Amino acid sequence: MKIIIIGGNGLLGSYTASEALQRGHKVTILSRKAGTGNVNNSEGIRFSQGNVYELSSDELKTIFEGHDAVVYSYNIDDREIQKRPAYEAFHYDHVTVCEKVLLAAKNCGVQKFIVFGSYFTYFNEKYPELKLADKHCYIKTRCEQRDMILHHSSDGFKTYVLELPYILGVLPGKVPPWTLFLSMLSGKGRQAVFFKKGGTAAVTAGQVGNATINIIEGNQESESIPLCGVNLSWTDIANTYFELTRKPKTLIQLPVVLFKIFGIVSSVALWLTGKERGLSVCHFADLQYHNTFIDPEISNSKTGISHENYNERLKEVIEEWISINKRNG
Image (cartoon, rainbow, N blue to C red; front, side):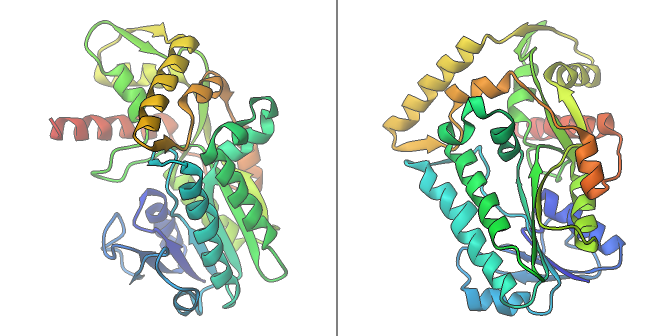
């Protein structure tokens, strides 16, 4: 099959491209910077340089022509700070641009369209009492994106959203998205103020690629699927960090009230500069201390993902983070 990956030079896109190549598929990577990333030297990959923000629908259809599946691995993430109101930037990225790309794929004969989404959409439904979409514009637009993608499913054009948790994987030279936690654990002294309650679902970058190609090769109906390979408590992560660095510390619980106060202060500071986060730190405290876990069997039954050595993947993330910090002084 012919597969085009938008954002294929990133962490998830590169692992997906590698999985596709191993199974004999032909891969095109559409990216703003062609020829970079983990897969730049791989045989069998065709690079097409272009920015989905700027490409017209007709230009996108020309690029997509002849492909069987499109993987959309490009979204601004929840850590980015936007001009207020941040909702507009996230909605434009998650919904407006994504829908333009989806319709271009649908209108030129592409059969499957897969988007890498967020597990926040899963927890928005699991914990309705938290009203996550109402309190966080990033989560609201991710829900809108999911609904839009599934709405456009039709005979001959299947659409899927992979609701992704924290990713265990590294892209050499790029800071892993675990900086907040590892920074809290890396300070001097014998104690570390951290989260002793709660935890998160996680999946390896390799599993994301594996699940994506399984869906492309399979025949399941359009669906939004939460992915999980392993559930990690925050103390699991802390203990792995201490084991790897050989610097054990006593964990001190960060009180919820202090987390919320920090959120209020930082939000006010951003507000005064005309900016805003996609996630409200103050309200996010309510979710941070939850066990945001997903039953791995859900992912396995729907995507057939392979199992990996999760502890080794977590150690790779920690080692890469430490290495980058050392290089940056």
